[in-house]
Length: 482
Ligand SMILES: *[C@@H]1O[C@H](CO)[C@@H](O)[C@H](O)[C@H]1NC(C)=O
Ligand SMILES: *[C@@H]1O[C@H](CO)[C@@H](O)[C@H](O)[C@H]1NC(C)=O
Ligand SMILES: *[C@@H]1O[C@H](CO)[C@@H](O)[C@H](O)[C@H]1NC(C)=O
Ligand SMILES: *[C@@H]1O[C@H](CO)[C@@H](O)[C@H](O)[C@H]1NC(C)=O
Ligand SMILES: *[C@@H]1O[C@H](CO)[C@@H](O)[C@H](O)[C@H]1NC(C)=O
Image (tube, rainbow, N blue to C red; front, top):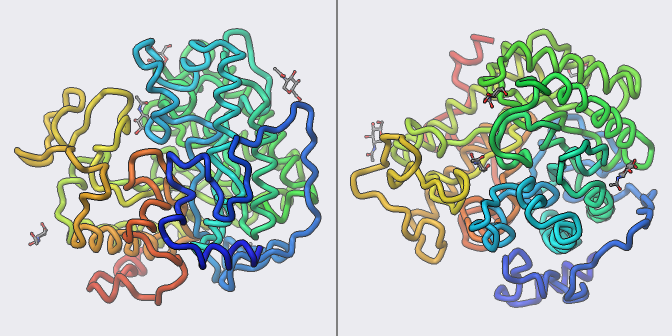
């Protein structure tokens, strides 16, 4: 490991681009990794290592010591391994582009269109190349200590007739990656990103369109079908082989509480928490993360966060909200420090441990396919029937081409990033969305570091960044209100 890192430092920067999207051929710093995707032979059992002594950096306890999510000084500093075991058109457009003319818009339609054998081949090549051991070498090097890994229910099989997903294959790729994480001291939060029926109708749940989870004819059935998957994940990650490297688990990504109804989602969460605690017993098993379902933290007041070791997760973005996107840069930085800082502080006080499982520095929605395939952007006035346009002459041209970013723009992006993470560290920490993308640099942590708008070491900063800008995160009025 030391050799790899030493070699990495000695290589000129140009070669240090394992995150380069077109660089699957040479995906490793050391060049020791094979050029072709390293497929896992069917039937292989991934044996977990018993060595949990790795420590990613001096700010983070080694894996075999507890990470105190509730009261510790160490914060979760991480990236999402998105677009990997659950596909997302805006992260890897290359997997979708050849089939868009055929109506492919998500993983469901991709699998349906290709059929089981071709879908499996395409997906398996992708699983074996999008994340490699080098991904974890980089993550450690950048001062990070956690990854959040989205999976779909289909990773665990149990498909019903008509569900075209590739079953089971991704699970072994997940387990192999967990061993790389273990070797480099990175903790892994696996989270269910796609539930049967789709909990939000978005492409990243696997299937775009109607919500068939707690909604519609099969809604209750699909919500119930979700519970055994969570029990299976809990039982698996609470075993002695995984408890150190995977001490925290996400129950469900972004159930659309605002469409399905908050009460229904919260009631389902109560069943889910009961189901997973039943699998291990109270006080045992991984920390469980509840995404807020776009509801206020007050909706979760019925949960005993501390005794059940629950955490709440908010995803905070500005580019999907016209009011926030239209603020000027100064106001956006101030908003991150103060509004998101007080959100993290208040939620920690009223609920308990609070994390931000997704955020980015994107200040426009120009990323290719971000809003779905070929549906346009708010920024240039081409999205849906929204009347919003950022300014009369705003255009998306160049917005996804980092070579056009000016030094001033990069300075702003870095400020916006540092402001956000300081705000989020008023809670338990953060996960950038995403570790990399094929062609949308504002959404790629690796591109940001390479381009100079994200820090080379996430720990290398003093406290009080927001204060130094004149926007202290913990306003007295917020402190008193808890
Ligand atoms: C964290 O601190 C709170 C308040 O002091 C306490 O109730 C709780 O048990 C602690 N949680 C953990 C996981 O240690
Ligand atoms: C997936 O794995 C499950 C559980 O191990 C098994 O029951 C099922 O038959 C597998 N499905 C496929 C399509 O291989
Ligand atoms: C597709 O995913 C992106 C990225 O998360 C999301 O912003 C968008 O709303 C989704 N589009 C559709 C049509 O589901
Ligand atoms: C909920 O289900 C109904 C009935 O199937 C469907 O018409 C509706 O579009 C669904 N709602 C959402 C938000 O998907
Ligand atoms: C940015 O917006 C804020 C709030 O609307 C305003 O007070 C400030 O003058 C603006 N700054 C610039 C540089 O335009």
